[in-house]
Structure formats: C-alpha cells, structure tokens
Length: 171
Image (tube, rainbow, N blue to C red; front, side):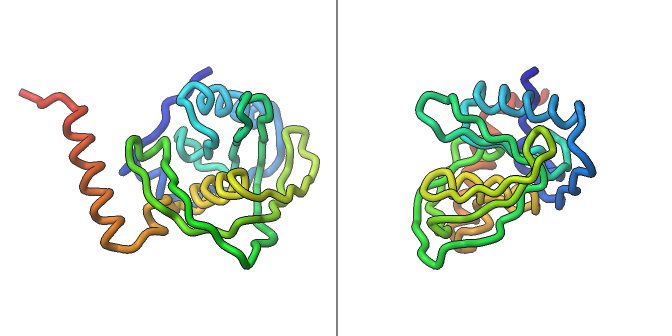
C-alpha cells in the first residue's frame, strides 16, 4: 500500500523515533509499504517518520534496476570514515529542494533485518550517503540542518514559496 509522505513542517519529522521492540508482522508490513511508497515517489530511501510512523525503521534501494531493497530496523551507525565527500541531496519530505551536504564517504551500520536477525553492512558512496540521510530522519534531522544557516534559510524560504504556489488560495 502506498503511504502518504509527510512534508516539512510536519512535526513528526522533528521527533526522535522510538526503537522497535521486535520485528513482527506489523513491522514487516510497514517495511513493504515503505518500499512501495519509496519506489512510487520515486526515491532511493525512506524513513518511517516520513510516513507518519515515529519508529526507527528505514528502507533504501540505490540500485539502477531498483532490485536491491534494504529493510532496516533500529539501524545504528557504528563506524564512519574519516574521509568525507560533498554531494547534492534532496528529500521526499522537502520536494524540489536540493543542497550540497558533506558526509563521511563510508559507514558501517548495525541493524535488524525483516526477520529480526542482526546484521552489519559496510556501505560507501551513494548507499552510505542514503543510509546517513535516512538515519538522520530517525533523529529528527533533515538534510537542510546540515547546511550553513544562510543556505538553510534560503532553501526553506524557497520551499515555503513553492508550497504556497502548490496550495490553492482559500476564499
């Protein structure tokens, strides 16, 4: 089922998500629905707060073919590379807004998969960036928070203007 993606300034996007107690059928359904929503958007990652669920759950798929989905419950970054890279990021919760964000080039993430098994994944490049972006969402952090105050202000003003243009005036 395709879920409604929450957009800024929805308060759920600023809340710290709560850990999942156990991977059950409800969580597996949420993971599947989040993947369906992410692919339809289209996007390469999605965090549960973005669909209104304040749970520590993310999905991602950076493959060209969109055939390598990752389902992560309670993901935690356990290692970050010292080397960083700057790249443009966008967000399904801030449509049409993009900014250059500096992040570690590689990370290691510990998480539970859809069966509840503990896993560790070492990621670099786009996947590392995507995982960091989505895990930020679990802590109530948006990519614009990682920009300079001036750049963040400019982008959020632009976003506000775009939102007003998309919303019909009330008479």
